[in-house]
Image (cartoon, rainbow, N blue to C red; front, side, top):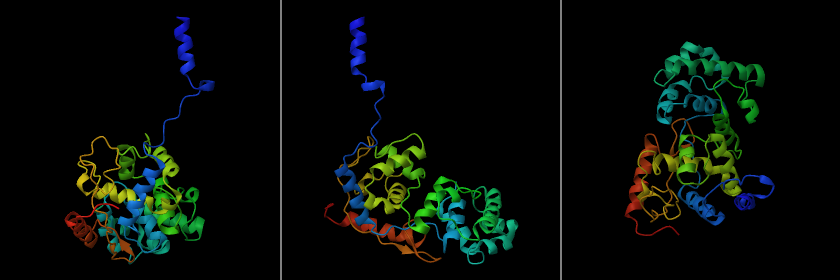
Length: 281
């Protein structure tokens, strides 16, 4: 009995500390290659939520909770041209905002939040969108994920907002597994090379949305199929590595594939990639 106890004690880490789980199942070289390929496929990835300035971006991201980007863009297509500042949004009023967004889930509560965050921006921040996470999360309807999206897209800061697609990918691919979005965020920040971090958010979202889908991953269209460590993957052959063009954003800027012309552009690019015979280089 004493011998067994001594064996168990010998196998424990020094100091009785538990071994910390690995942040990723990939080597540094494999992670570098994964994001290198993403950077070639989408050199300048863009978010799919239409917006014209930091304020409309905050509103759009807040509205996107439990709603699709396509649905939000349809609702804001008429809202943002007449209310693209906190002052104009307040003038429109809760009822006016509600009339524009009633096609979005939870629209009543979201209309209240849009008016409340507009008022707070005027009262506390001089009508300007703050540039720190700590200040952004004080706005009604704005959580950590929304704050990270705004910091990245509006102010060019290296943050990583973990949405449902990124959370799924991080765990399915064993790229940065975690039980909570915050845990996944911290693990991704630790493993993604710094020179790829700025665009990593959009690369992962778009890959999860159009290739590594929730119900049925399209492994034949995956450019990292040979590197992927997902147990359920169905192919080890990477799809051809070609650039997918950005599409026009009706409110200004660019949109990636997903709504209207963006979806069509991605469809053409994916169709072309399947016809090409070369493999990832």
